[in-house]
Image (cartoon, rainbow, N blue to C red; front, side, top):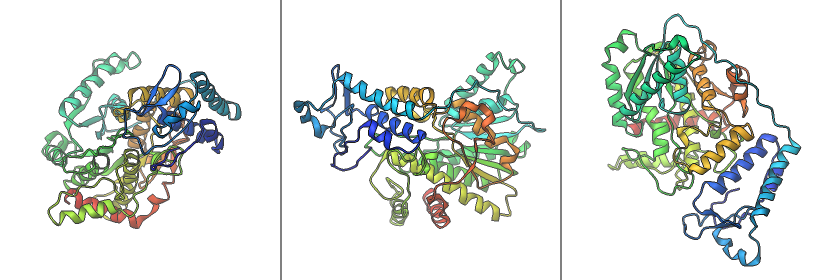
Length: 470
């Protein structure tokens, strides 16, 4: 449980968990407590008890007392014996775990199933951002293995080249893919730094002058997959080259300009499809979205003021889309809400655009996947423990390989790409079904209540256009 003022919250782990209404929500509640306990420098492990550190004052606005730690405001409680011994802390933790296991059965893990092979007559050309790590890397590897050309759009050319080399080496060494051994894959490394709109425009210019791409008639699929997430304890506002808050600037505005310029330069074939990597955290009513700060763009005051400031020569800086104070947790969740708004509005505009025929755009939630580059800014201890707890212990997390399969499914499945404006997701832990989950557990679902607001979506699009200079 989190508070942003000086009031004290005294929610024990077992109370928080037992008040949750479902097995999944109980698990997410425990993981949320675990994240708070580990992913902050304000708390340190003492050989005899867990107490708050007095050396870090940046967390003074968080006042919590749980069975595992106390806050700075409760430092004096040590003299009253309120800090738990290590044995007591472990005991409380065990009670919390037992509450889940004794009152709710967890589904067993099934053996991994074979990857799906998508039939085609002509190899596709697929442009993918965020292809150097996580689900983007796995999807690029999967699709290159099937014979498609994959344009690896990475933050730097060196990262893109390293990715191409790594995929080639891994597939050559894959004993289960002997047919791919020592076969030169069709991987094209390119630089596209989404945190710099100049880099995005240079990337588009490079593509527009690519004779090989022209000979293929353009791009068959555009995968907008790259994303960043700041450390949830961060207080400083990092910015893109143009002065936008880094999370929204990269995850939304960089992709927004990239898509607009690709369409403007007619780099997508008729009948092409666009895939947007979103997240279940865009919805405050989802298990993940209900933890910590909640996603909402409010009345877009942050962007409204940023756009208004450009008329006076200012750079258009903003900290949060809704105009509030910077919150790194909320910024990431907001950025995923932005991607859903973007997907829905883009499809509506494409449907009315006679210049681009049959182009469909969809978004998807790959699930909770901790072991990816997305968590690079988090506490390493937090990442390892959280990954083990979510993926291996409670089975609510997914693997990067399964997430890559979901991205591949969204890109290549004929049934998916024949329709647009849809959002795909699955229940937590669906990776236990392997690729067989796609089209079954992993299927079309509703977006959040806020994302259904088409009026807000249209205004959000207009403000995005002005900020990127369209």
